Length: 457
Image 1 (cartoon, helix red, strand yellow):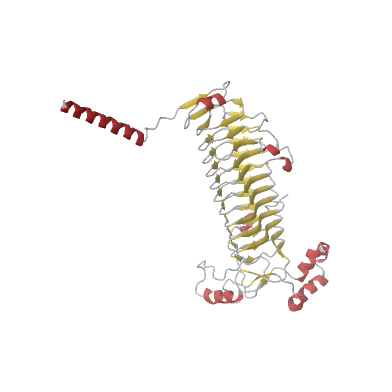
Image 2 (cartoon, one colour):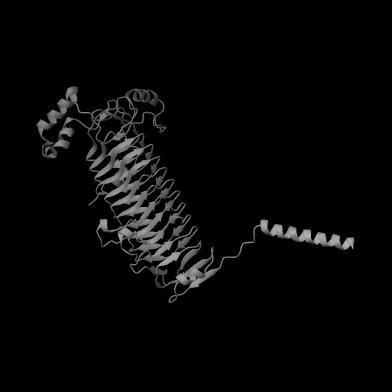
């Protein structure tokens, strides 16, 4: 009897242990199912039947639907030799609305959203909470907004082609990609055109924008109130403005090309603690427009063949500007201020740079930090690669021309040239200017001439 009770106790203990382990150990993952949708079938009922983690494959064809994805799954287009599938919203609301995290949409043509600006209709709308969404290799065309992304973190938007309502005027269009209140987005390798702003970024931080082509829009990129973003290796051209950064800090803008824009190449407005380096800014009405900017570093940029190389305004000071090439701009710097603004190196640093330059020729070290100015009229007696007299961007005649543009008709007259010479000789008539104490005699960018003629039309 005792043995029987003992065996019963052991059996109960074993069952309790097994139940405990079943509760504490993770269940073996179930295999994701793949669902296939053929032309003539509806997609939304298949999404409703699919489980989280499943894949819904759509065969090439035309589907007139407005889709809602409310669970983590993959929506994938299949190219069976006749092209990718097209999902048309019929100009009703959002063509695809995502209302769940971890959704992937790929290899689709998504078009024909509604056109109500107040409702923010989009080809793909990632609503709040749609974290880690991936949209890749899609064509988004004839939508009001291509992608609207709101309060969704760690999204990836890669290698898409986005074109807007090109038959409407710019104010009637939406933006190509709109980011609002997001973190950690990656916007990579997209081609965006004929929208209001190709990329509109508002209150969105820690993002990467790399390898995008942005053209024929109002702004290539429009940043507002966004911090710690990286903007790298993008092309922005034939817009009104190439890149506009406003009310931002801690940004890096590196190795981009912005050319042929009818207003500015790069606008920096109310910006602090940022680095702008290695960019090509060519053929714009204004290369840089710098307004209310402090504690920024501009270095290694090529500013070439713009109507105005740099328009500097509104107490933009305490910035470091060195190692840039200003070549062939009809007006190198437009500056109206009450005191000189020092770029390059200070006079003391410039003297030290010259002293240290001997025996270091050709090593590429930027000792003095000066910029190259194609209209510099100074000299370099000791052949150290630095000018012996400071470069001054503006003089009294420039000031008069800013205030009285009709003076441009007289710029070649002997009287005006004599007045300019007098202003140079008598400091009492001198106007405050951007001053580069030790300008470079030669440009850093050897291929600068390749960018001549890339002008807006």
